[in-house]
Structure formats: C-alpha cells, structure tokens
Length: 137
Image (cartoon, rainbow, N blue to C red; front, side, top):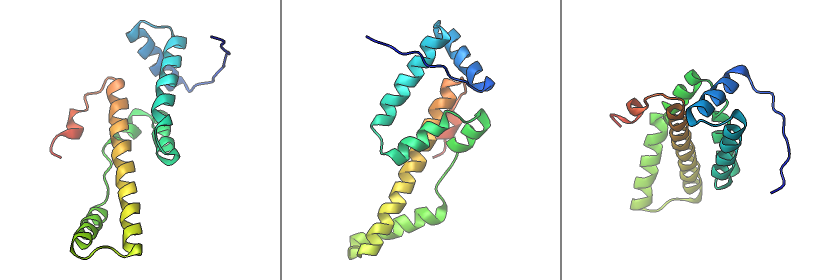
C-alpha cells in the first residue's frame, strides 16, 4: 500500500495525551496517531455532516470542557415541548409546522445525546471513571 507522510503541529497537551495512549498500548506515537485518525474517520463517515462536525471537535477539548459536554442536557422546556407534540400527534396529528418543530427538536436531542456519549467515551479513553454520568438517569 502506498503511503504519504504528513507533518502535524499539535498542541502540547494533545501530543502528551497521544504519547500517553501510545505508551499504554505499547505503540509508537505515529502508530497511535494513525489508529486514532482511522478510527475517527470511520466513525464520522456514517454520520450526517452536522453531527460529524460536532463529534470531531470534541477531540480538541480539554478534560474540563469534555466533562461539561458529557454532562450537557436538553433544556426542560425543550423536553416538555417534545412531550407535548408527541401527545398532540397521538390525539389529532400534527400540522406541518408542528411536525417540522418536532423534527428539529428531535435532531437537537439526538445531537445532545451523541455529543454526551462521545464525550464520555473520550473521557474514559483518557482514563477517567465516567460511571457518574450514567447514574440516576
């Protein structure tokens, strides 16, 4: 297989994390970087571009920002509106505007859940115990 060399300037903190992952897996930094890149590309190929962009940007976050993303929730108002629209749909059906509103809200909820799950996975990869994120839900 033909290959091409790529030179990347990484922030020190990102390089350190990559080096630590490589050491844990007993890989070279280059091998670990390639594995991370290939895994990320494969995961993102299956997602709509909006979701892929949201997920891809998580890898650049520091740990505090990742914890914030992993704990994010949809607003209670949004959740109530979704519930109300589901009830309306069952009782009489939705108007075109209501259906569009529901679809938009469901996409937002999906994005939030995907970001939360991926942020939790990244935190776990970084060695954190993420069980607190899933208790009491």
